[in-house]
Length: 139
Image 1 (cartoon, rainbow, N blue to C red):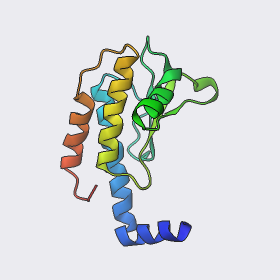
Image 2 (cartoon, helix red, strand yellow; image 1 turned 90 degrees about the vertical axis):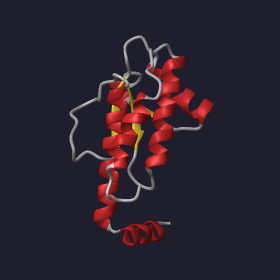
Image 3 (tube, rainbow, N blue to C red; image 1 turned 180 degrees about the horizontal axis):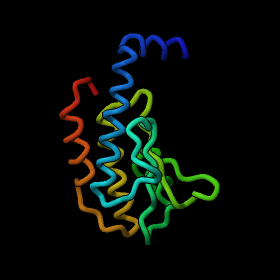
Image 4 (spheres, rainbow, N blue to C red; image 1 turned 45 degrees about the horizontal axis):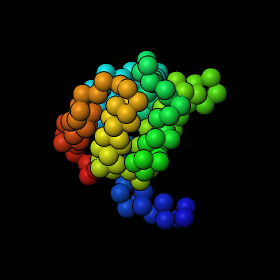
C-alpha cells in the first residue's frame, strides 16, 4: 500500500500534491467561516492537513461526528481530551478532492441544522466552490 501511495504522489508531482492540499484547506476553511463558525487556532496558511472548528454555542458537539457518520456517511473527527465536545475536525490531506470537501461541508450544514444551529443553506459550499474555481491544479 505504501508503494502505491508513493507512486500516486510521484505521478501527481510533489509540488502539485502540496498545492492541492493548500487549495482544499483554503476552500474548507472559507466554507466553515461562511457558516459563521470559528476556526480553532490561527488560520495558518501552512497548516493544510486538517481544519479544526469550534462547536458553536448551543450545539452538542459530542453528537456532530456520530450524526455525520451514521446518517450521512461522512467522518468528522471530534476533539480529544479537554477539547472533547468543543471542536470537530475536517481532514483534507491525502487522497481528497474538491468533491470530498463540498460533500463534507454540505453534511456539516445538515448536521448543525439538525442540532439546532441556524444554518445559512449553501453558504459553506458556495464559499468553497469560489476557492476551487480559482485553482490552477486539478482537484
